[in-house]
Amino acid sequence: MVVESGKPIWDVIRHARDGKGLSQRELAERLAAVSGKTSVTRDDVKRWETGKRIPRPAWRHWLADVLEIPVERLDVAARLARHARRCRVSSVAPTRP
Image (cartoon, rainbow, N blue to C red; front, top):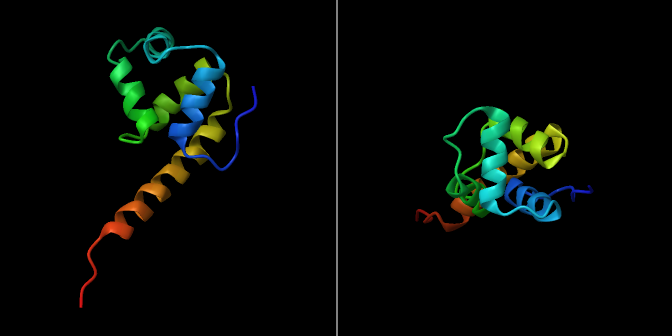
């Protein structure tokens, strides 16, 4: 599976999930199965795909396993997402006189 470079993690996860034909719920179920952590839900996947949350390194490892993409790709995408979030926050911050 080819995943675009230079994309934030929310795009990478969504495109990889779509490419495998999985719903958010199915991805969450597979993550729960491989990680042994039943706490992951469709809502977690939704938060990752909308940029409300960035998955922690442990979850990126499991995502890479389930989505069959390199964990390094997710790590780079997470850094890009953090950068995008910082830029978005600084662009709306009020300026001081």
